[in-house]
Length: 119
Image (cartoon, rainbow, N blue to C red):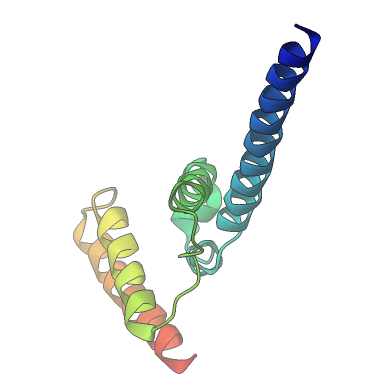
């Protein structure tokens, strides 16, 4: 009877230790995603920099990377970085639809794409 209890506790101990290791890896990947290159690129825009959206954006990135278990945060190609800048631009455009706002956004987009291409 005691041996059965010991075996049961041993199995539950293994399961618990495996779960804790898995949780630790998930947390590490989450933190890596929170401070990914993608966040560093978007940090330059005033929209993400000055609002709580920045925190939401970093949390979403971290959770996505933790969930898939790979570090997708760094851009492998310039095209990915440019697509991200365009996506961010389209997201910002819905908040400011005046003509002058659109003109300044167009200038800003050109500058950002140029900066990304230079890297």
